[in-house]
Length: 183
Image 1 (cartoon, rainbow, N blue to C red):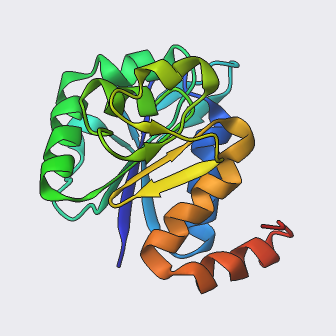
Image 2 (cartoon, rainbow, N blue to C red):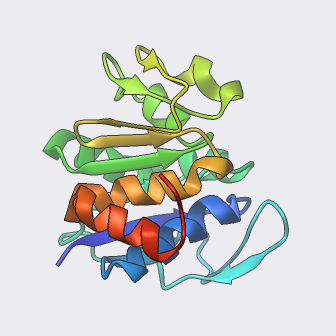
């Protein structure tokens, strides 16, 4: 079974995070909402408090195939400031495991040099942080094991790209039809 972890820091963008959680759970993909704050309840950039599934320091990442970084401010900066998460991101990249980031969060991958030579996208104000990437204005870019997306308005496309990575295009198209989303 596929296993994904999505990370919540204070100031995350709720639609970017929860859309991914919803779509993956509808698809039968195991996704854990992981707090990097030390508290299970984490508040979004718009004041929406969500109870996560686990705390970072109590989570076993050995069976996880993908890490997802939602955007939002100051959520993205708070994710990047979490040293153990950044070490985990480095390990996943080195092992060729999936990394996915949306909105401002692709800047984290850019700062780490993980986008060099790849097509990538982000929220327009963060495109300059996609160091070495071929910047795209598509809603989502898939470059090998790295998936990036532009922002909140692209959250469904981002979630469907993740479903495609694990279950194929037919499964993602079937889910899109089920939620009445036209691709």
